[in-house]
Length: 162
Image (spheres, rainbow, N blue to C red):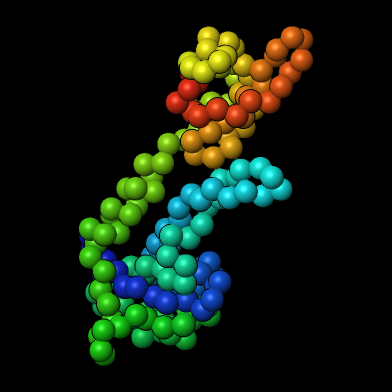
């Protein structure tokens, strides 16, 4: 990655993935950062991955690459971002930082069906069954109360594996 020059590429609207695939097919290294975003769909909170920079991607090329002259004619690409006549060169440290932040996202801590213990709230020390993640900070649990199983949404820091 250190021997690459990174360029900022503007894509055509909603064609970031097509542009990335086409640039990679031509030998470029593409970085298209995503970020989690909470959305409410059908009354439920969902975690959705969205582009961090919609309409843009980063293209890594070796110094003597001929692909730079072909970028504008690549399907899905609008243009190289330029300052004057020169294309913008992005510092490799920025790419490394964005990649490390993207990889730092924690994997799921609990599996569906796993027994968990509540650490706080009115059901402190109760055991429940982990059902799903509702966002990057909340989970849905199945708690048995008075012989009935009810859904309970709690913060992730309020539960631990039983």
